[in-house]
Amino acid sequence: MGLSWSLVTAGDALDWYTSMDTRRGAYAAISLGGYFWVDIEDAHNATTAMAAQGSTCMRVALDSLNGEATIAHRFVPSTCSETAMAVCRAAADQRSSQLRERGVLPVDAVNVLWVPGPHALSVSRRLGSGPFGGACAFAIGPINSDDVTAGTDGSVGGSANLLHQLSSVSISMTIQPSNSTDSVAVVGALKLGLLGSVDAPEPAAAGVASSDGWHSVELSPGEVVVAVSGCAGGFVERLVLHTSAGRMWTTPFSAASLCSVPFMEVAPPGAYLVGVQWGSGDGGNGRGGF
Image (cartoon, rainbow, N blue to C red):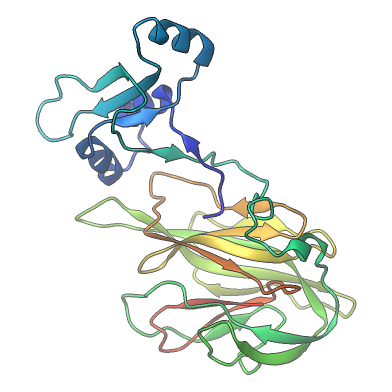
């Protein structure tokens, strides 16, 4: 997803048992997996005390939700050579993208600036499998559906003379209820704002906004989106934007947040996001246009 991850703490393990934001399936999977490692928050004092007992690491196990829980948590000091799972966490309020430092982005990605004029267009792979059949075609942004061919390998998909910069991205999340598992939050609607030297059109939207409204990010003049990461299952469950200014933005996390399969789409060298299209008959598959 493009986030920075770290080992969970003992406090996280305690919170999972009482938090309303813990997904039942996630808790069950962790409890059935057995022991997992936790980071020692008060590292100096805890390590000193554990070292005196011949232990330098800490493992935790959770009771299953099935049946009566007699011991909710088992914290076991142990040697670091024992076998246990690794469960990691990511802060939901991260705002700085680490993709360049990890070598995921091209070296010159931070120097990419939007410029008006002719653009060669390419398309990302399809995201989401769309279990409900065909969807109405659309293309939003300073492009139209006639400009982009339906390639799936990121090859050049046409060209366009673009006079308006992508200036804002808004996402509306929709909750899909389920009788068999926890509800899932998916991207229900997208809205792209444009800015340019010529009169810019009103923000173009696609999809149906939920009662939760819109979550938006404004791009600075010249700032562009150079990578999009997130999660997708039957539908796109999360979009994370990474910009040339080193910023990262996504919608808030909740108890309905799920990550079926993570993805990462990086723009070709010197390229940036200019729009989003959805093909009729793609079964609800979305593509980004770079």
